[in-house]
Image 1 (tube, rainbow, N blue to C red):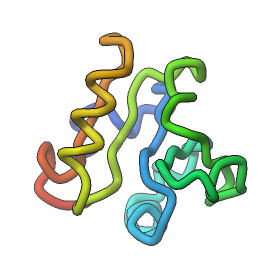
Image 2: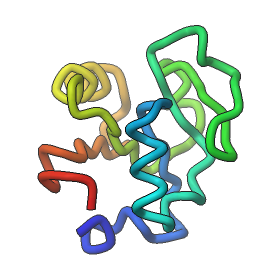
Image 3: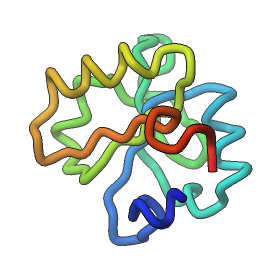
Length: 106
């Protein structure tokens, strides 16, 4: 289902919001997402750290990284994260709530 939504297209500049166990499981289950190098988390202790072959950034950095879309990899806080990103990001950056849009990691 992620493929039908265009999220597995290698030309898409995709970031993932969530730098924890949920995202580790997501990338394990969807190997095509392992190309992602930009991860975001609200936890400042994670900012600047290496994560799954990429780097964890502050959410405020999303707009400056020229991304096409951000996939939210958090079930517990998906609605809050989505509301914040839609309020702060340019409309050109697609915000994709994994659970709302797909039901579960797929």
